[in-house]
Image (cartoon, rainbow, N blue to C red):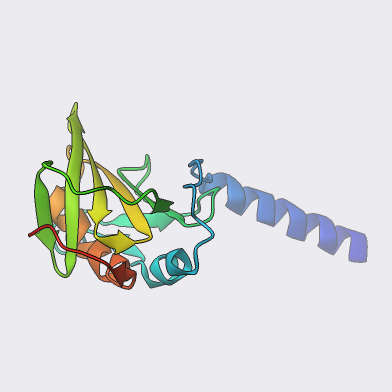
Length: 152
């Protein structure tokens, strides 16, 4: 009888794991920085509860210092990125965090926190959610990192 219970538990665990595949993200260079742990544990469980018909739920990821939202992933976050140098790139301030807009390609925006140590990268599929909704949800967690300078 114990073997049957064990087999049922394993089968149940595998069935549950099959419902929510892990998002594979490469770890950032400094993902093990203690500041990244503060960011990851402070991230919300979902994005867009007030602005989307179905909020984007947080998913399991393959790497430390990372997060993903939605299925397929519409928003990804990687903490521990190289800190950007002063730049002429567009700077967007959301809450207490400055974000540099590093790229816009096919409705996908790539931003990195500016003046924060460690730096955090966020990639947003703007066909699924607005950049403002995603950044408003994620900025409070990123604000837990050390402020070293601002865009202005």
